Length: 81
Image (tube, rainbow, N blue to C red):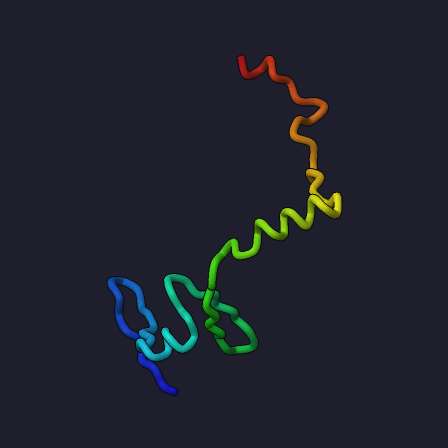
């Protein structure tokens, strides 16, 4: 399929027709994957899909520990007063 690059203000864009948008469930955002002289356009369903389930799974596996301490040992709170 051939598509034209169109002018959008000072930028340029690619216009996708309604059939393509519906067929591939493209809503407001897409992921662009740049790979070996090609651009792959992939729909983004929901940026945080399944996060709640994954967090519960982490808790059940005891894998929800912070990667670093919230307060550093050498931190001096008196400087903020």
